[in-house]
Length: 266
Image (cartoon, rainbow, N blue to C red; front, side):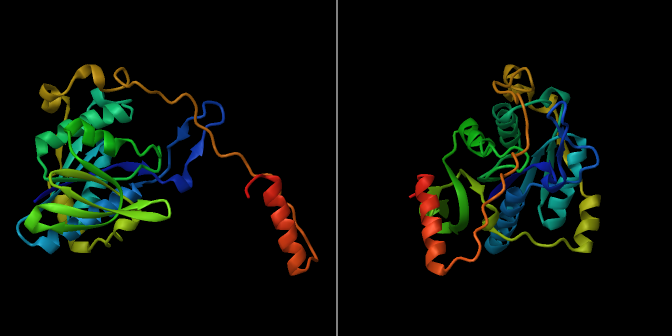
């Protein structure tokens, strides 16, 4: 089985700030990491490959600037077999639709039986790219995967899909695409030897010229993106709460119920 995993290098949002004048993210000096959901998807792919033990491979694909090479080498150090960096000036400024168009073309070039992406990236939180890649490749898809099992006899996956307070159990034939929740798998720690091997491994680069035969240039980059971010802003500060003191249990319950009713929550 050829398992392709799409990852994204993102700024560590715990340390991201906003420019108060431009409302843009200040990325200078902010460390970059592999997106959490993507890393869990990568772990699930590596674990599945190891479980099958039949010559299956895990290929990691990352679209980004040249410095995203670091994220790909981390993926190799975790146990991925091959890594591709999708990078070109023509791809800059792409929104989710344009990104999915480009990554879909890269996956066509690389080859796959199963594609795993993260549910969403912590720097955008749109949860759009994975499903849009599936649409670009005309693949069936299951989103919000928190557990998966491969049924070899049927060449299918059984996916436990998170759904509010319940779960869907979905059977899906390969080839297909699955978007992973962070709960899908706990990423493994890298070993020193694997890290050394990762920095001796080739990270292949796919640029515009490598993909132009299967890309529509009108639908990539900033010019080809149908959506644009008008403004970014932090969450507003919460107003001070009401502290109720010296109440009995019954009085506290009565006060809380009254507040819930007042706000039409019950």
